[in-house]
Length: 379
Image 1 (spheres, rainbow, N blue to C red):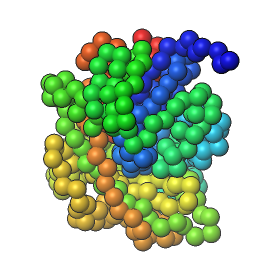
Image 2: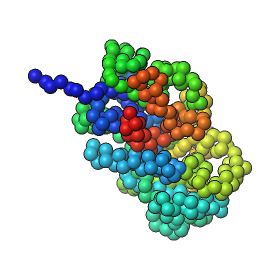
Image 3: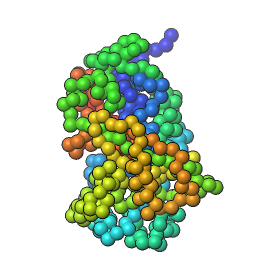
Image 4: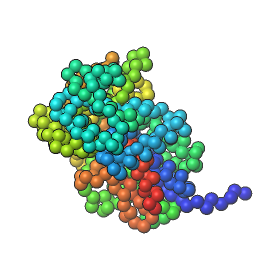
């Protein structure tokens, strides 16, 4: 006779990174967890990104600490589940005086809290076979960042979570209605003590009024892959050009120099600013180079890639990096919800017993594990 399972039960809607992180936190906290996913596998923004776990881009304080916690969880999970990951670190390059001023001021403002180094061009060249050192002024190196391969990692985590914590997955199970203690699905009715809605499309359809009241839009980003590099060649740290210094919130801590750089880009790179382009490169498990990206906002977005945007990305990339193999093998886009009022996430309860976790923007891989722990702990 099987013993009665007295653990509190939880339903998680969405098997992307936010849903997986929430399920992990719930399972560790002693819940019996079931994940409901409308597709046969995760196919959204969680697999259409760089795979960068990126503390360097987060503002000092709670967000930076959350990113470091998420990175530590990624390391633990990847080691335990045998998931490929690369503790590659990151390099932000300065090729102009305005960019150098941002790096120097950023180091001065954050030096006590972050273990970063400002490298000379020769030191950058010794660390990165990719970076163009001619005309380079300096590079900011951080060892905090790791890379995972999003399609492989998100595909592997469900099996690992089932084996380790007994998390149950119901694939191809769209949720039609959600209320206190009950989820009505296409396959029947499921009941639980708590429910967590962690998918943007499900949040919008299950609680349309709550969604409509938020200052939220959608963001489309375009990315590419360069073919696998020859002879198992590795690029070392992930690489960012100067445009990234105005994209990530952390570098605004540099103060006036960051604003001057932003103004300079508006004059000299108006198309890049208009399309929200900043350019970075990382290498996946197969040796391919993932490059991007752009940021186009709106509630209804063109489903097709804009090749002009891709061309702008590749042109800028060629100015600070070179690769043995540079042919584009794949191009794609991803779409995620984005808050427009500066907030970094949505955590709300539209009805008793249901928590929505959403709106992380482009920071899902970097922040989800840490945020999920915080949310579950608060409950």
